[in-house]
Length: 323
Image (cartoon, rainbow, N blue to C red; front, side, top):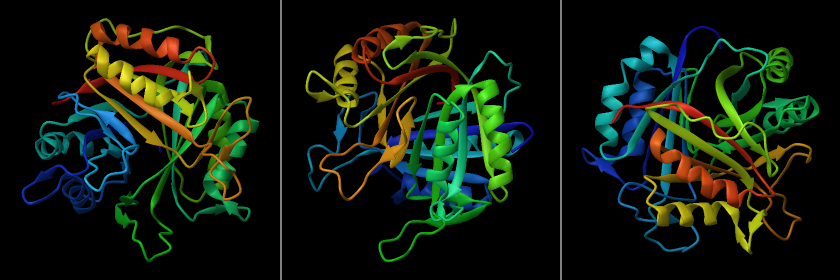
């Protein structure tokens, strides 16, 4: 993607309703009706919002109300026209906007997002696996593949169904690396993928595998997004790191946390990995997002810093909260 793009992200409970329908359906109906270039609805595994009600898949109840995340990306003027309508649908949830196409410098850390179809392939391999392999070989710090359950690609609605191959359900590969490394990888991906949808965002790389890189660089005012990339197999005192982050931040009074489970990915120098039928335990990537005001995010980072003393990739970036 070239030009001036925005990413519009909504965080809400999956059972939340508006006007007699689920908020998730209302949002994707809107994005499909407006033929948004790409959008993806992802189901979280754990999180909480302003009321601090914990939503988690670890309880395995029939009344689960897990967190949901809907991301829409298109040209600035098209996204700006939707902001008010999306905020109205989400209501008490959280809606953020951030630029998805920066002018980058060689010294910058970059978050690259590559949007694919689930059954898209490169050289007879699933495209998301091939993309992760290339990113790993080129020295990108880490990548996580998130599978959508609904969304739009090229302006057309693509929805996962039980009895279907779901070939066009959206998949997002989120990677973090230096501007030069990402630029080199993008050049190769453009030659491998048919009409690829890719966006870049400037981020601060705070930590990598327990080592501080730049520390926290939160904005002087406004809102900040702290993102923690770990694995389900990485533990802190016997508990998965992402679950400990959620519980610690909930106890500290943080405004909200959302965790998504990936299906494939890596943190360099470790090779790409994901779910396989032959493995005994889950070894899939995890993405935990914390959004709060700049004056409160430092306290959240202190907790994250302790819990990622040995594992994980941590980034921060300024975001605009619209509701």
